[in-house]
Image (cartoon, rainbow, N blue to C red; front, side, top):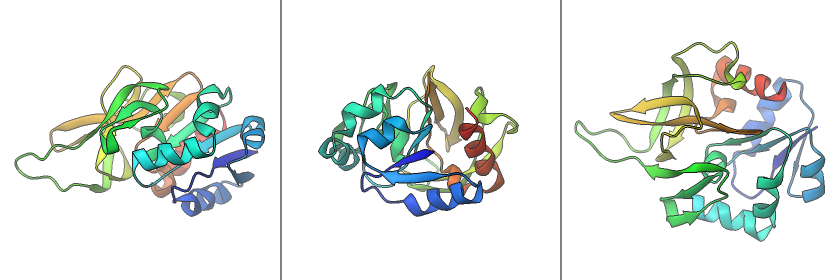
Length: 196
């Protein structure tokens, strides 16, 4: 059973649809006991980091998530709040990944912020990307991203700025992109996660 953590950050429907397509059993929950007993945990999210962290704190889940021992996958805001801190709302986050989330800097020629659409992932180095080709395209919607760090298992460059497209530390994984919106590539990444 997969627990999808519900902390009022939206985007649950597309994650549910992706899991249904894979034939996976899941439950949407904010119940600590259910989350702890799940085989896999998904921490999705769309929104703003400081608000997302407050929603986790309100449910007591800020103390739960970092202590989980099964595979955990944060998506978009989910991976951002698993870092040490975020420039968005000056948020103190869960501290699982020892890096910070930064806003894209405007540059010349100007880039569109937020980045919205398809971009490539490179330097793939995790079982999460088994069977995924270097330079595969995934779908992004974001203005902030985790800074490059040694926990990066994939990178993306937008304009001249390179960021951590995915992170891993032990049983914790995170993707800045949306695998549930990334077509066959994203479906394969989710399947790989469920096989961990």
